[in-house]
Length: 210
Ligand code: AP5
Image (cartoon, rainbow, N blue to C red; front, side, top):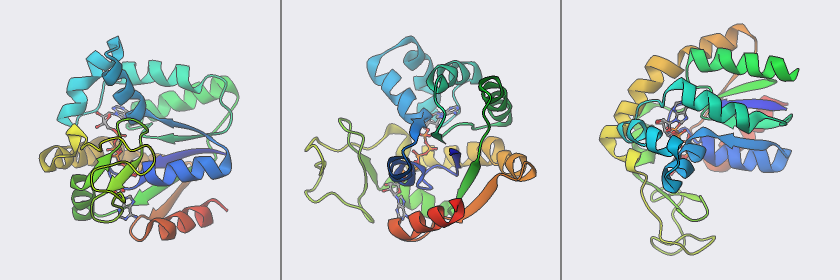
């Protein structure tokens, strides 16, 4: 399977994508995580991407496409989370896959209303060491402020303040939402209701793939 996980910020792409990729044996490529790692390491890409990310804007296409071309090389079963994010990226992905003799098998759209997104993201905490994702309301760590998996101190992403979350939602509607139409026309899009418990949403995703 070659899946694109589409949906607004905070829809649950990371949470569901991690489990799905693990259970289906797919390579998981998460552009947000790749960029955050580049920022943390202070690479050239990280230095260029940082200010866009902090403002909730998209990082320029040429940086993303170079990063994804490298990441996709040799992959034949994968799940993409956070890419493509606009029409130019979607068309570039089609070209890259065409060169590899591959195509997408599914595009899953996780649907979640705006106010639920603001609630989720302002309560999200992440582990800077192992990448585990929590939510103070719906999925809190067992011990306050500590990662269940590795014990590191949890942090809030700098782009998870209410102001930046609202900006990210605007950017999603203007630049990413047109992909719903793009992939519907190709007959690849399946809508999944992203509201419910983690297991309920996961079961809907599995049903959508079968
Ligand atoms: P990125 O990291 O991709 O952010 P995003 O798309 O905004 O997605 P998130 O990671 O915020 O949310 P998610 O859908 O993964 O939700 P999660 O599972 O964590 O991008 C960050 C930035 O990088 C962008 O703004 C941009 O600058 C740049 N960038 C990245 N890709 C790019 C590209 N291709 N081109 C250009 N720029 C790019 O869940 C969220 C919270 O909700 C968690 O706390 C979780 O526990 C909770 N939760 C999950 N599911 C449920 C549920 N069912 N019920 C209740 N709570 C839930």
